[in-house]
Each structure stands twice: as structure tokens, then as C-alpha cells.
Amino acid sequence: MRWEELEQQPCSLARTLSVVGDRWTLLVLRECFLGTRRFDAFEQRLGITRHLLADRLKTLVRAGVLNKVAYQQRPLREEYRLTDKGRDLYPVIMSLVNWGDRYMSDENGPPIRHIHRTCGKPLRAQLVCSECAEPLAPHEVLLEEAPAFEGQLLPAHWHAKQAGET
Image (tube, rainbow, N blue to C red; front, side, top):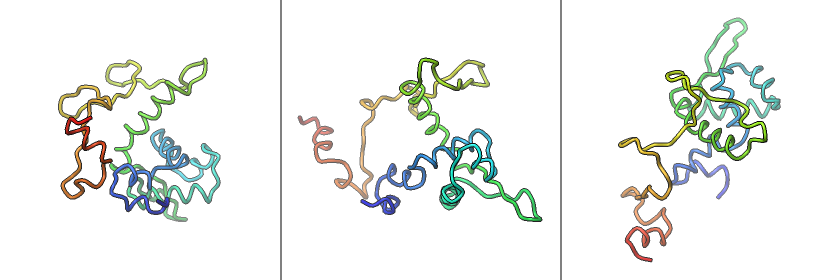
């Protein structure tokens, strides 16, 4: 499978990676969540080349993750703002931050603490079930192919495992 073909795959993760699957895009998104909006500010904060930054921003705009909004008319100047689709990536970014805090920190610990405004305490984002609010673990989640894809996406051994066979 070629990188350009990811968005055509019948896999939500592959399709997502076609938009946010490289390191620069994730760092651009980090900056968006930190309030960075203007091209020059992204360039300065990230130390990324103008060409690469323009490409990543264009991809995010095309995918509907960011909108370009004019902040000046003459000359026209635009900034980048997260859309609802973009803001919905916040849990993804926080999950990666949590993983990095746990496994990539040095002896000084995590470089940034995240404080919940409501309770004022440091937080660690956690994935929970949308129905019962229990924390999720991989072994507690069953997978089921949508009817249109039945028998096509999950490996054969998965189907046997689900049926209780060994």
C-alpha cells in the first residue's frame, strides 16, 4: 500500500493517518491547541521549512481540520483555526502526550503539566466507554465488522477467536 492510497483504505486508522500521520502534522496540531494561528508563528515555533509547513497546513485545510480565516484585508492575511473536526483530535493529541510523559520523559519528569480547570488538579487523559464511563483496555473491546465489510477486514484468526475457538 502506498502512502497516497491510505485515504482509500476501508480502515478508519489508515484514513486518519492520511491526514495526520506524519510528525510535522502532529506538531502543527500541537501548536494549534497551544493557540498558534499564523504561518510565521508556526514557522518560528516549529523550525520547519516554509515549503513543508505550507504543505502540512494545506493538507489540514483540505481535510477540514483547519479553516483559513482572514485577519487583515489589505494586504490579505489569513490565520489558521481549528474546526470542530480539528478540535475532535484533542483526545488523540492528549493520548500521545500521556504516552510520551510516561515513556519518554527524562529524570526531570514530564515537561508540561496539564491542569483541569474545573477541579484544579493535574490530569492524565483517559479513554473511557461512551456508554458506561469505565476505562477501556484492549482486552475489553470486541471488534465487529460493519455488514458491508463482513469477512473482509479482520484477520481470519480473529473470527475464530470471537467464536470461542482456539
